[in-house]
Length: 195
Image 1 (cartoon, rainbow, N blue to C red):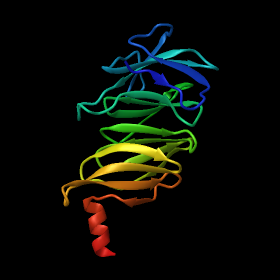
Image 2: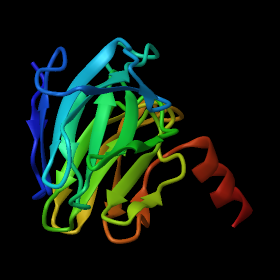
Image 3: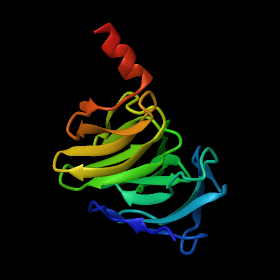
Image 4: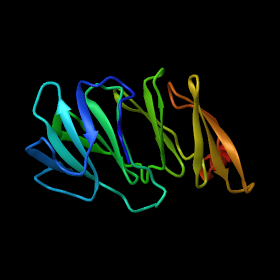
């Protein structure tokens, strides 16, 4: 079962639940549709300064291996909800404030508490989410697959698929700015040919 993880101290409480338990306000996403319901993941929010509310977040259907997660973000008001690869940043104090991220499907998530950053990735690129929102996005750093992402100090190191060699390679990303070394993709090959 998915649990709501508190990697950063929020100004709200939240729990993964199947249906509204203590909330009269009910929403579904995408769209912040009041009174709606979608198949995905259900979260009950308890803001410190407001009424509790319940929401369902629509799940994706692109990959059976896409992740489902719910966690705090470095911004004390915001949460990241990933439902079968569909990702949402929602303000726990304002159910009408939700961003549906265009990274699809989200295949993984990693957290650096020291750098106050959450990483999410699809098959080819990685995004860094900080208190201010999306801090950086890598271009395509893999032909078709990112795995074994680990945080090593101020860097993220990941395995990537290098189609021309038929092997896995690595990419090392600076968590502060998204600059990277390594990786392999059509974009990287084209860029090196034109350099």
